[in-house]
Image (tube, rainbow, N blue to C red; front, side, top):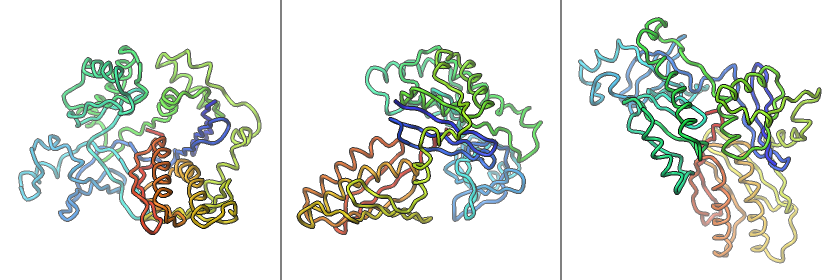
Length: 395
């Protein structure tokens, strides 16, 4: 049985996914400091030729980073970006336009912005200024994919808008799809409206909607969740209103308000599992262990034999510990939602058949991860490199 547990307060929202009463994944949204997906009216502050980017003033003395490749050229009525052309510079330097934050600012880097602005629905994503995008989730295949393709081209999509049908659109009726489409389109047209933009101050925030309700319900639909349990009365009531607005009343019976005095994560006995996310050392059932070290550049996972003594030689010991570690490594990648370059230091093996078994098993299991992952081969030093994109639940 799968459950979604929601712990909500004024500062953050924690969403825990349980499978057979075990913590499957955890997602935390810091409401007070969240900026990703926020939409601003902005102006170009200055240009960097070496970085091929504009630095953008998007309000309250904040400067963001906008690469040339994230600019919709028709905003400036030009076919290409030519910063040596005076006409081009005159066109862009005094013009207000819309940007969206795709990567939040941190201590070392400015926020990354785009002019390709996304609106996230339950069944689809609309992308302003990306008219050439008309896609269906790769997870939908066969006859259903063909059916959705027909539905996609039946929608009245404006010329400057792209669309992606999400995995949750699987077997959804055209009426339901069109309802979500029109709802997102109304929001898009509102911020696009010139009179609306003029009413706003220059370089100001014009849309800060979060998509938490959308994310929870989309995940619920897509991954066969049996129950949603929410510990905040206000959040619960608003979520029910959201479900009713989308005319999905039949799902209300599976959404429960957690009224007990104890902390929701304690009641479902996952608090210890959550705390383990922050531990450097992880014990394996086999007797081996993992050491997980994260730096700004990469994460290193070291596989150790520890107290394992069940095999009769070094090669057998190395293989069994490495093989048993795979399942925990994939679990930890998902649980900690690790991103970037990850290097796994397996115990050295000399048998090519054993090495291939480790690689093939790892590849098979990692495919279940919802993130985009690129996987290498085990090197002669026992190192396996992979690249993982952080899974953004709240989109």
